[in-house]
Length: 151
Image (tube, rainbow, N blue to C red; front, side, top):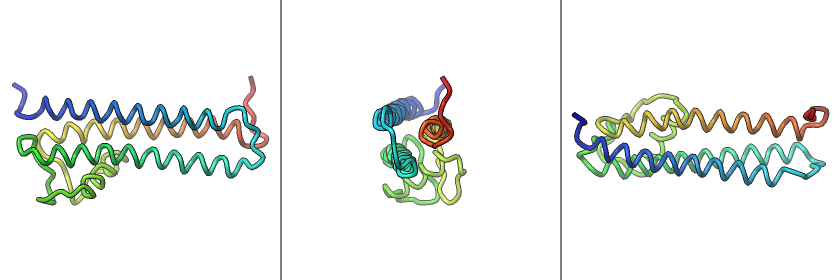
């Protein structure tokens, strides 16, 4: 039998994860469109702008999950975040950053059905970070002088 609150936690987790993947896809699509077809004279500024944009994407995705933790924590049937009895939105974002980056949990950790979100966020964060890394590699082969792609 499924524990109390797990179906709701799984639904919220699925929705937040779908939003995060969509944000990442659209962000990369926009970055690709901005860099495609342009001959950057200043490859350094193009790559730096791309890196800051990727960081912003990841921060936005962490905030999405942080909102999820904050909302799920408000429903006692779903468990709670241990280490802070009154989880603030900032604490939810901090917990999210730890899960997204798979840095592990320290002073805050999920218990109960909220763990569903933490597990899925770790997997999603790993995939989004890898996706950004491969995107960066492809952009670097295009934008760095002397490292043009062979077709």
